[in-house]
Image 1 (cartoon, one colour):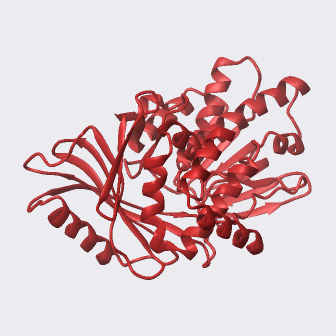
Image 2 (tube, rainbow, N blue to C red):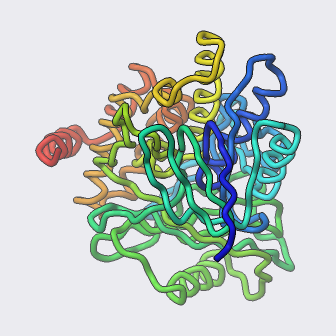
Image 3 (cartoon, helix red, strand yellow):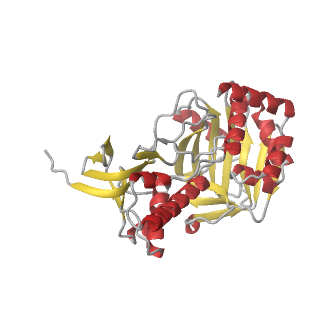
Length: 400
């Protein structure tokens, strides 16, 4: 029987993906620039190394800790549907791409400079026991005793949840075929049944792009199906006969109209964080910027708790450092819109095109970035068919 070493920590971050590393990096950065003591933190993840496996994009409405990981910027973005197309533009709200490889390295560099945050790769949390005084986390390598834990791991998604699922190919071509100045956010394709299908294209250069086939539906496709869709789009829509696939990626994001709340029991020593902790904007699937906000807020709140108490906070005070949930108005709009996507998927192309063509770009970006004010919400509402919007709002209320 292997010998287990008991190791005490104030805080555990279970999972070191985008959200988990952001938390760890913010705590590390705060510890370096502040004289305030911060919790001794263990970050646990089963992977043994990192690679550029994801692409994260968002509208840059505010700075984040990971500016060095931004590799592309666009001032123009396109939505196409039913033979029509609209290009929006805003020079001060750029659409940016975060390279996951650079992101992971930035986070690991910050963590490596901290004496209080320890990254443990190659370990899977197999057991979590909530004792009277501490949590016990068991892995194949060690046993950890912690006061409080944030769980960022993926978990099963309820079967009745609308999903955003996609497969992307980063490709290079022998001739110019991409406009590097315009992102294609949504190029809608014909679809059948309760399925919304579009392509998403990030042009890195005239001969280099990420091309993703994306669906909003409650069931996934086979790998062969996604591949056929991309091949067909490249040949028919982009008139390509030859290309080289440099990298592949895929993902599934829940678009729940009634998201499950994070564990909020004041006595609980473990809380959800990240994809299943109020990070995703359900109506769009965007999550990167909110994850950075949550990590920054948690770090700042912890500093305040340590400063106020001048000692290690209790697990209740650690719980009090959890960031505030997304505002109720934003959650309501998301719920109504997801309700519409579930019930009337065939109208999604026209509605998305209407939003991008009728709403001022700055207003829509603030809405999509969860920074909307009353004027922005009003613009979004007036761009949508009133009868449809009211009907979906009523149905959403009944489904609560």
